Length: 66
Image 1 (cartoon, helix red, strand yellow):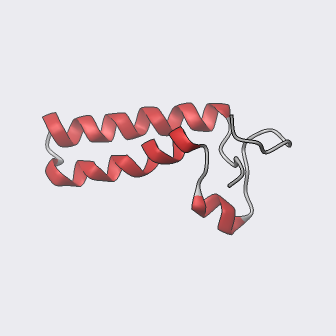
Image 2 (cartoon, rainbow, N blue to C red):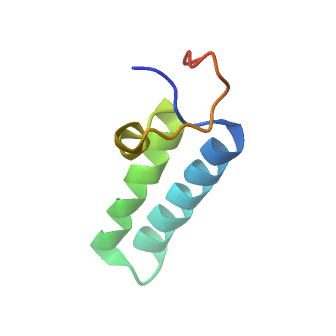
């Protein structure tokens, strides 16, 4: 599995995932807050299946996961 999520994209995904999870726990989203696991996981693992299907990548050209 090669890296296809770059630095800024990764940080935004992790931040958005954490915010959605927090809204699920402390706010109005309830169980829908679990949707935040998707951007959080794609940010942590630096791989997005949708990017792979669309042929997109925001990481450097070497593509190796750190």
